[in-house]
Length: 310
Image (cartoon, rainbow, N blue to C red; front, top):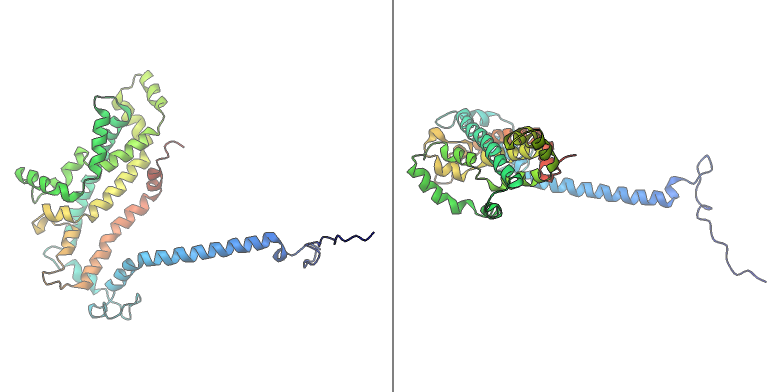
């Protein structure tokens, strides 16, 4: 009887072998899978690098332009200047009525007090929503969430009328005092979500030891909420430092101008501007933001994730 069944070919029979008689890695299925994965990973990295370059191109172009002579800024579209100069920084620093250190100090004052105000007021409000029971709590929480959806342009006119009646126009009060009244609902919601992840058994144990709400808040909740507090501080710093509209409306005297408003004065009414000095000071104004972000980056990720205790 003839056996029509052909012998099953051994996949490794024809495979090239190394000096020890083992199949070479290049000829195995596992090696082909590794090659495919490596190729996919390389392609992914190339796409991410290209996308990141596109996102960063405006910043890179601004940095490059700050180092070019003014007549070459729009004549050379490339990133690498054919001629370098640092005169834009010195010219821009002293271009306005006050040196730019004056405007940096104004921005630092407003930003610093805004961070302190948001950390204190928003954490207290978040603790109340997350841990306390009081009448109409759900309604107040819903109203607080609804205020997140209100654009600034809707509330800026009533705010201006109120602060004008109080005599606060052309002072830092309209930009600082509301931060101490827990007006940033986004940060309250962020901290509420974080505090809710903390086990209530900690509160109950503290109550058994005779602790009140203030002691629980300061000794237990706040130390465990470091990621949420750091996230609040970072976002407050970035949003306040970059804020232009509110500062432009409430600050009318050049003596009170902040960095974004002072940068606007480089552009005159005809649209002409000293582009080189303006780009140079813009680069310097980004320094504090990058520094603050890099210093608190690890807390920022943990705070957004609201992971709670680990």
